[in-house]
Image (cartoon, rainbow, N blue to C red; front, side, top):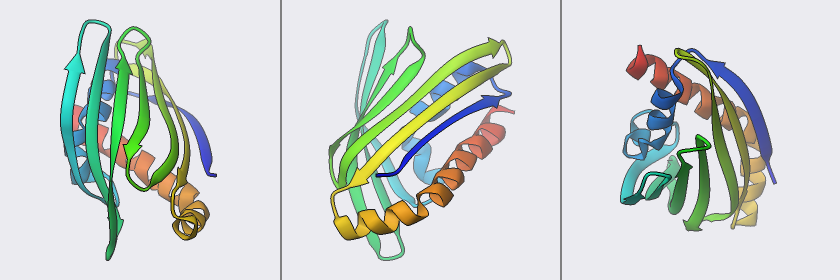
Length: 148
């Protein structure tokens, strides 16, 4: 099962990056292999925001949609993503944001993922590192486009 942990400094304000990650409706505009993205429901109070969203992920003729729950803990500045339905058997995805100063922050990103289909999971595992780097750089490029 592929696992990745990255700690990276970004020269953008913490809250701006959090909003960028929570803007799931826009994922299809910049994330590789994301064919469509749609927020289904948002519940929010002073302490947390819970988003249910669909992402259609695909490559060429193969595509599938999964529904996830995105939990944002406002006090901890942490986003936790869990699968609700679809082709993902197991997903642990955590974004933690730590303010360095007014204009920069440190992002801790952790992901552990396993697909339901053994054949796809095997192929996915082989290309996980390359795909992960491409996705992370897509978020960084999006931040440069939207926040500068």
